[in-house]
Length: 373
Image 1 (tube, rainbow, N blue to C red):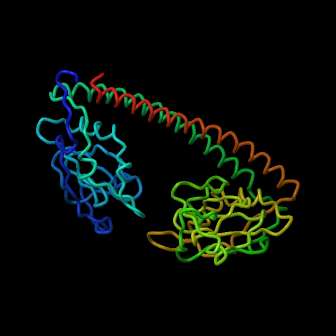
Image 2 (image 1 turned 90 degrees about the vertical axis):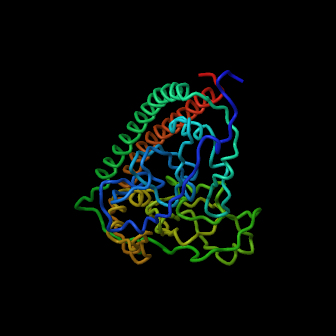
Image 3 (image 1 turned 180 degrees about the horizontal axis):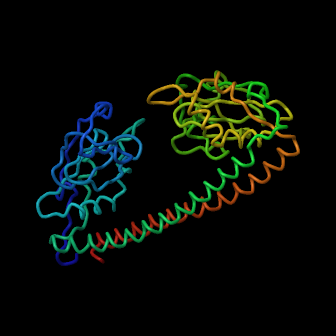
């Protein structure tokens, strides 16, 4: 073991504190003190819980295990917990200690992710005993992480520019002309509906997936480790006979996520609307309309719900599309597909950059907490 370093448990170098503030309680409050949630700053209020700088860790729900360095005279809501230094330990050094761990791996929640300090607090880690040495490590990591974050920000900027370009092209290409015809979705569809308003019986080894709006990603139905499965018996209860002229779109929660149906073995949840287009309707042209800001602007006017947005099936059926000739539809789809492929290439490059950035950060953290910096 390197001189001046020793093995400690996380709970030996810091302690946790809890918040009992619910976000709904903040309505109508104002002030000069920031309060934070899992996604960052929520608003400013007239109170604070922490006098000094601290660490906020997401302990419940989406983003569990995420770490934030937060300022003095601020607070967090109850889905986060405070991490505070014990005597002789630099708060930013502790933060980097925690970032070197995979806190999400301590998840104990079956449906809602949850981590406990009592679990990850027992983790042993190699730490500097001297505050001056901790500060030296912090300064190195701060400088290197700033470079990595700049690389990530530049990649994100390029990706956003490409997405903006695509939306501009979409708007130009889909701008209705005088000779275009106007039809509602219900006029060009065989059927429009949604999925199960309830919860099916899940099984671990089923062949049929139960999907919701979060499974619809850029034209594809995507399954992940959290996608539930059902038995064939359960499937028969709720199966909807979709075909290759079907477009799926999220209408509850995150609105406007779209995908083509390509024969996947699925049943739908209520957040998924299915649109089975009539034979001869160009599904690719309709898809681009639904995936564009044209639909999102309509959705923003039509949705109901204060906390969870919802678009009714009536609103979906009444959504109006302007159609050029079939030949023009084909030309527009071809051009948009080409632009979309360029955007996807940039997205893949951005994803690789993000992965590289995280790998670089973890490599630096390993060095720091192996006494190699």
